[in-house]
Amino acid sequence: MTLFDHILNGNKKYGTCPEDIVRAFYNCEPEVIQSDVILAPAWKPDLFDAYTDNIEPIFTGFHNDWNLSINGKKLTYIQTGIGAPVLMEAVLALGCTPCKRIIFIGSVGGLSPNFNIGDIVIPEYSVSGDGACRYLTDRKPGENDCFGKKYYPDKELFDNAVSKTKNISKANNVNWHIGKNFSIDTIIAQFAHLDEIIAMGCDCIEMESAAFFKASEICGIKACAIYSVSDNTLQKKSLLSGRTENEIEYRKTVRKNVLTKIVLESLELI
Image (cartoon, rainbow, N blue to C red; front, top):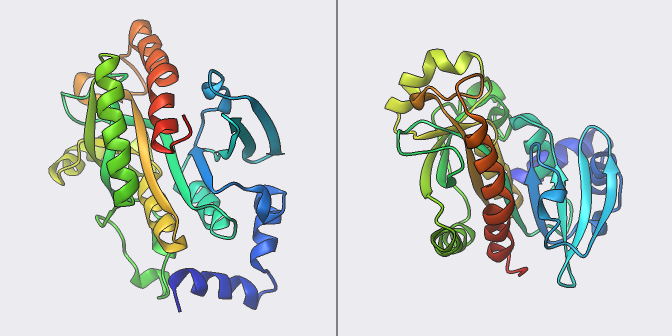
């Protein structure tokens, strides 16, 4: 029995089948969800307006979901909300649908002087500093301390994303990096622990991708992440203070004109 079977059996024990999970979480039948999915904690699908033929709402509520048509092909776009728990729930629910591939897009903080605001980052792994990963187990959660454990993207999708990022970034004169990420549950309290996190070998930080990688692997879904650098504490330009308007606007431009193209080419949609 797989770990995902174990999770589904736990639901079944208390009267919930996989179809119920999808209906409750996405307010649709499983087949409405497409095989290719983009997950974003905060960004809306209008980021992809230059490529979309049609945007069809699926659900609006504690998260928001759409089906996008691009070049006659469909993909599902899910705005999950911020944090590992909600993103993990989204992936586990996707495990009950036809979803086969997911690209996670979002913001990442730089923990290296080489990471500038607006740069693209593809994480080669994410270190768990979150609590959500603890529950992805067939053991007692108290016996499953995941802190410091590395979780990885799907190699094929990662390699494809790296290849596309290298070419598209070069053509647009945008810096990009392969990152070693740390996933954390806090913004304000993180600053007291950044030295420890950097000492673990991490050069960027965000809140969701360790749980994202782990849940996707459990569900048998190919997954990778593509980040936009939003801040860099080592440069005294954190999310809370220090960033200039020019840096923020540059990041928005790169995100809309470069990151979107990387995502869609990685999924072979354009």
